[in-house]
Image (cartoon, rainbow, N blue to C red; front, top):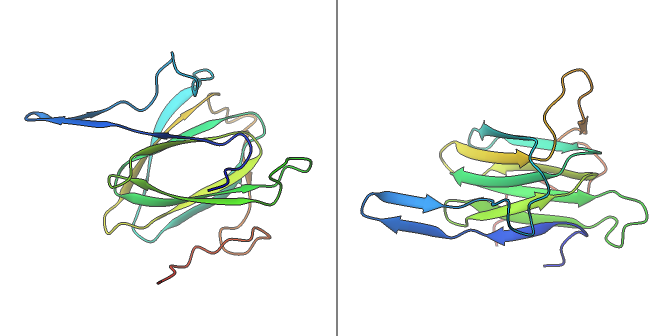
Length: 153
């Protein structure tokens, strides 16, 4: 896949033993790490789309730890070498990945599992309700060339 300029993907290693499992998501001593702002958990119910939004200042580090999501990214940065490119990822228990989304990339996801998806996002800036760094577009009716509909092949 041709990745949007600035997007990074890390395959996550799950280490199981007879007590359960461990999965490291991000470390302060790796290339992906920029800085710490906040970590939050959000959930998405089956079939629900949470999209589109972007941040001008914040980098997102998205990891689905339960269920499965279809994560889509769109590069709307004029002057970017990947302007207009869409990336489409499946993340979750069957495909453990961390996707780093740089500023000014529209992104969103749809829960594609029969159970609720749990997403952990480690962001580089804490949320500020006085001046939120969040810019939204409608999930299903925007200029972004992407459809959340299922495609049977």
